[in-house]
Length: 152
Image (cartoon, rainbow, N blue to C red; front, side):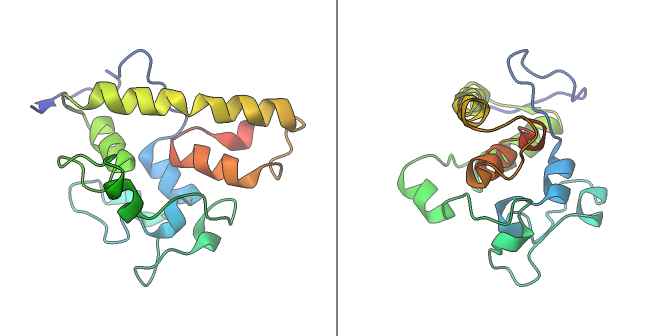
């Protein structure tokens, strides 16, 4: 059951994303495909500088690191990772959470976000600090989960 929270700073204390949804869209995530239809439920200013697909297809060059680092939505659906309340997946959940929505799925999604930290350690253990071109696919995947991998 959804509960509306008006203060978007009231995040679960374990959930500390580096990037807002707007920042993620501007940097370039999901090949520009996610939200290329600019859903009206989100602020118009999110779309102003967003790197979005012009033709409804995934374009890796619209990603910040110019690599494909995500699986098609069909794979996510097949594996049962998509819940009906957020049919587009984690980023849709994050956008709605950021806007203040709280649901019984928050715990699962926050745990999934926390699990991505293993990629941070792999980058830190295998790349020189500041070398943003080391492990670009992992870095792009982290951007998809609101971790700012440019600063690792």
